[in-house]
Image 1 (cartoon, rainbow, N blue to C red):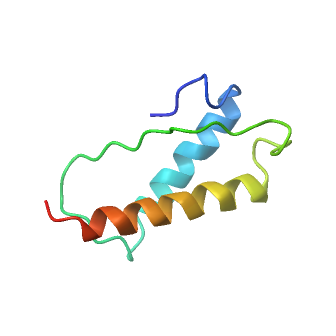
Image 2: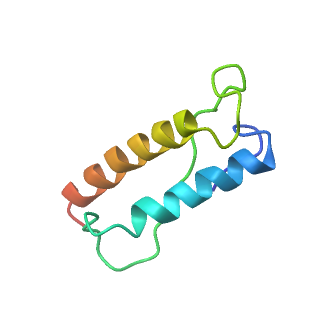
Length: 77
């Protein structure tokens, strides 16, 4: 879930969603088969990420997602 209050522009929200799909579909993610919800908790400031589709934004999102999925894989179900 990418709420509008954290990512104001639709193109930014869509970029974040695409990164979620890309990271979760990777072979290095070892999560059990289930429906998982990824919820954005912090904003992406337009001053820091000027372009909504910049590599800087994609790297930031991908890094956070990889940490999140690694932590979720360690936690027993």
